[in-house]
Image 1 (tube, rainbow, N blue to C red):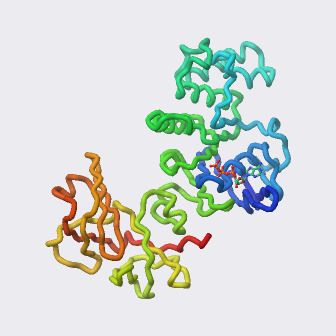
Image 2: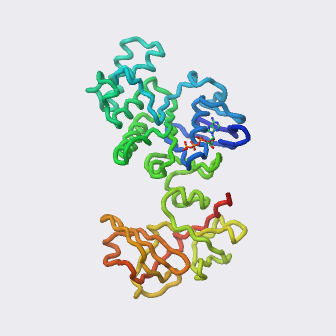
Length: 357
Ligand code: ATP
């Protein structure tokens, strides 16, 4: 059963559309990420779901009920914002107990539930510590415990990890994800970090200028983006302007022709086509290897070798390619070296070019 449904949800500020006619179904028990660049409308959309912003038009249904104009405090949703908004004068336990107090649960119930939640976030020994004396990651966990204290049906997270340093952020991504899966709580999280979305989400909603550009499982979107905007936003990619010959081949910048296995979703006008190939799909071969239809001669112009992985930039006269490999796969690769870059036909995707701004 789908719990949350948005129909043609729109929010205008003056003449500008912050969110423009969004249709979306959020499946029960899943973690969905709203992902997109700054200003694409992620937060506005989340705030409308939370009840902190009213749609200009469209409707929002939750568990079969129209909640479009229901006040936030009657929605029974848990929320965590970037600022966390913990009460600084309270202890960990008092912060977590706060929403339970508002609901007038008995003292006993509060104590039991707080103990349960502190166990869940692995901070039972810090119950009486002021939240100001916690680390960033610990504060983060307290904010989540407080948000789920009253067992909300929906958890809304707006960039909750953006204040943390990279390492802690990655640890918290895993922690939140495991907690969400354990509780089975339907969660929507806003982020502009594609790696974070890829790590955590069951489904990603990629947004562009107030609209949904694509919805899907992280790897499906990575492997099969619908447009240059999505391809560029999710992961690294080589994106080249090409012309399609209508018979399984494209001409690259500079005129070389290569075969592609999937001419699907090619826009009608050939000038609007891009070829996408992910760096890990570009195979780097020795220049002395046999020439082949999808093998392009080039020169290595840059190498980023970080031990476990290696990234090479290859100048192919007319365009450059980035290839992701490992020092073990391509031993002896060096700057200025001539190589063959193989683009396997099945890994070459044709996508629609980004619309002009
Ligand atoms: P970010 O990642 O930077 O937070 P976002 O994708 O969450 O961006 P929103 O905050 O939803 O984007 O904003 C979408 C658009 O709506 C932006 O152009 C923003 O300037 C505009 N906007 C948001 N809130 C208001 C407001 N209260 N009044 C006027 N314009 C607003």
